[in-house]
Amino acid sequence: MASPSNKGKGIAEGSSSQSQPKPQPQTQPQPQPPPNPPALSRYESQKRRDWNTFCQYLRNQQPPVHISQCGSNHILDFLQYLDQFGKTKVHVHGCVFFGQVEPAGQCNCPLKQAWGSLDALIGRLRAAYEENGGLPERNPFAGGGIRVFLREVRDSQAKARGVPYKKRKKKKRNPMKSGDGTTGTSSSNLPS
Image (cartoon, rainbow, N blue to C red; front, side, top):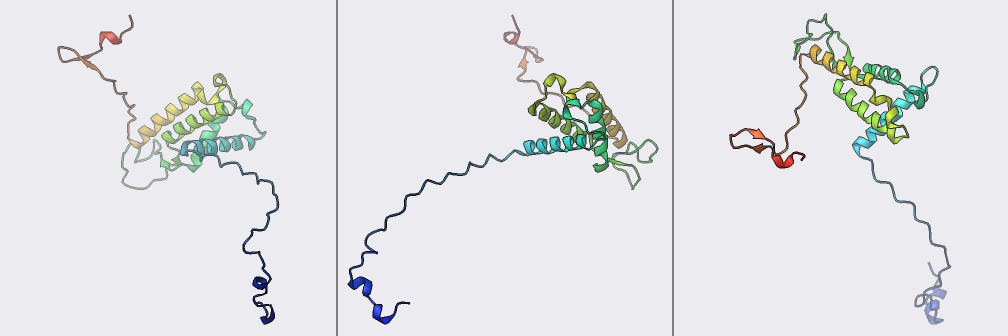
């Protein structure tokens, strides 16, 4: 607070501090931080998480396995390891609920990873392998042994749960109607 003797001193002396701006010191422009990268999609986030989990699994093996030495046996071991975290009840052959769609009670059958989850996981890992420098022709996630394993899991889970797996049929694109009411192809679509 100003003392009474200094009251109005700035105005009486003709102070120009309010009428003229003080010169600003020259400063270098501040570098702008790089813009944040776009947020990853749910699929991309899951793919990255799955890839990191699989690589960590390989590093934890005794002895550790480098991704370049990874084979279908490592992948199959990984898929079986994941069963301990599964949430799908898969009834065994001796279970009274084997083959029932909606069992009437509880049982001690194991919880496993659902076939659809494993199939989607392999698809994401297959893509991540190639995105991380792997050659498509050497992709261990695309091997026949993996496809056979997934097919066996699908079939066994379908039998155990009493739900047959039905492959979705692809819809035909714009079929042409012939004069007799049956569907056919237009001759203009056929190669000449």
